[in-house]
Image 1 (cartoon, rainbow, N blue to C red):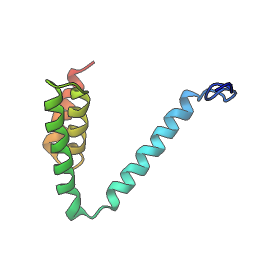
Image 2: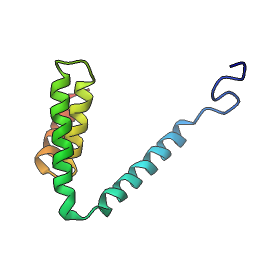
Image 3: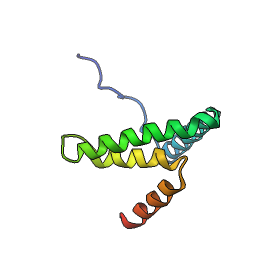
Image 4: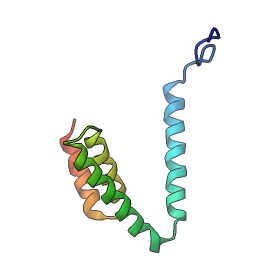
Length: 96
């Protein structure tokens, strides 16, 4: 309890290093997604995306991050479905 606070003595991450780390994580996630056999990818995206959409819709009236969950579900669906990509692109244009 009497020690230094968490992260004390460590330099703050530079914005450039954070962007690089996020880009690396995105590339690793994309590579992992491509390793899933194509015959399993589409149903997996449909089930997980639909579950997140339903949970997000429920969280609009119940406590929880409803809009974030809806966006995550739509993002997962957009990995495999063109209609979800178009809807996600339209929402991105309308939101600031």
